[in-house]
Length: 148
Image (cartoon, rainbow, N blue to C red; front, side, top):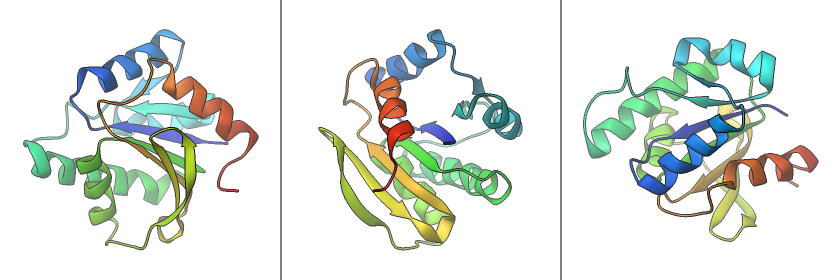
C-alpha cells in the first residue's frame, strides 16, 4: 500500500511522531519529491513547511491546496493527516466531498473513506495525540488491511 503522511500540526507531539518516523528511515520530502518517495518507499512524509504560508486556518487551507495538487498526480491508497484544521483544509481544497467514517484504528485515530479524492483510506488524528511510534503502528495496520 502507498500512503502520504501530512503533518499540519505544530504540536510538539506530532512533530516528535514525524521525527521518530524519519529516524526509522521514512522519507520526508517536499511536494515535488512525493511521487519518487512513494515509488521507492511506499510511504512518505510531506515536508511542506517551506512552501506553505499563513497561520491557523489559512495555513491549513494552503497546505490543503498542496495536498490536492499531489493527489492529482500521485496515486495513493491512504492519506494520514495530523491536525483537525489540516484535515479540514485538505477536504476544503478537494471541494468538500463526503467523508465516510469506517472505524477507529487505534484509540483516538479515525479511519474514513474519501472516494471522491481517490483515497481509499483517510486516517486522521489530533495533533497532540498518540505515542511516538504511531506512524509505524499505522503502517503495520494498513499493510494488513485498509478500509475493511
